[in-house]
Image 1 (cartoon, rainbow, N blue to C red):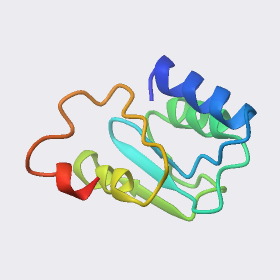
Image 2: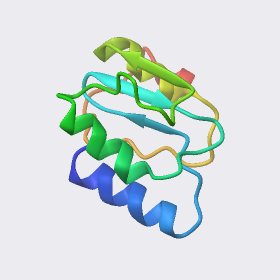
Image 3: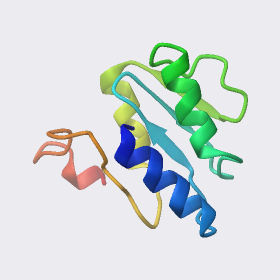
Image 4: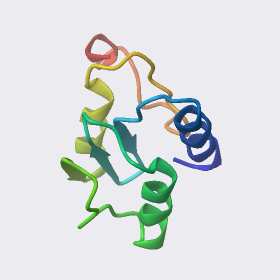
Length: 96
């Protein structure tokens, strides 16, 4: 969730897309109903030292680099792997 992820979430949300998951380098959040304000969630992550602890709009909060990738395996129409280079490989590509 660097600048690319932040602005992708912003523009997709503004156009009516439902953002259901956000993954950072050390934590992730999931809400199958969609986040009310995904940019606010991203800003919260960085303001709280790369943590989503106590973020109120999440149904699932995952702390830990390897565990948060599980959000990328949730069912969705569009997956934007922004700023997570080398995260997908032959060992996990079948989960996407």
